Length: 285
Image 1: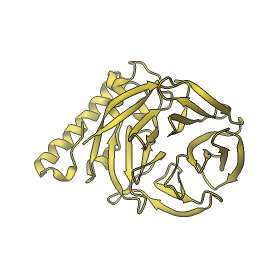
Image 2 (image 1 turned 90 degrees about the horizontal axis):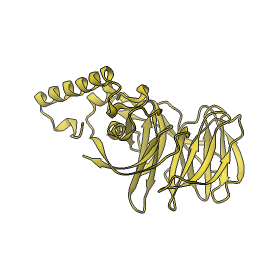
Image 3 (image 1 turned 30 degrees about the vertical axis):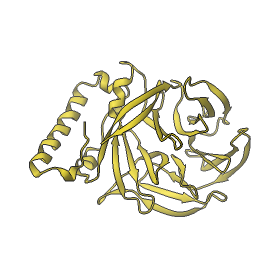
Image 4 (image 1 turned 120 degrees about the vertical axis):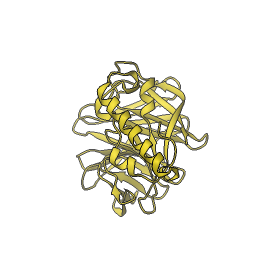
């Protein structure tokens, strides 16, 4: 698996590395039923053009623990708070906001969202939970303890991922841009464009703020990109493709989506839409 920084390789090593990666993805397309690639074919390839040219570190992952996850959950947002997972699920007439136990996956608290809303990313900010909607151009705001809806705020465009740097709410919309929003008005304060060198990095999906960086799932890719919130520069990539070897052979799963961080214990969790597990991962350099 890809582990070393591209810039550390000699010209000859780079060519070997390049053709090894290409061969890997050719094999992936020829043998999609291999258990390593179990699941939805849409999310079984990396952004080859971007990753092969990158000069930033690419990390693989090791699985430390695996916890149950609802295979009926179309996961759009995930965060960890005070020992529990909070999850937003999507689709019209099926969207929810839930709090669940980590170890068992048992749902402890749940509200069903009105059927006209297709919900997306969520974040906790000052005892409130903010939940985006895909094309309704509305953020739903709840009391974090009771899940009682407090208010709604309109915004322009699509909503995908949502996180916070402690001051602003950070939102993705499926493009290469991340917007910073005032928590009270949800007005855009500033915007960054995510770039790896000179290349734009698009399809930014679910977001999480981890150790001063924005981590983003890439839609339909087994990748997380680590982003500087100052200027949008890519600090590194994380290859999640190894997680597919932990899925059942014929698992009916969709794309990887969902990142949560336990800052107190320094634990990172990832999952996907309809995935049977939430994985606690460790990065391998």
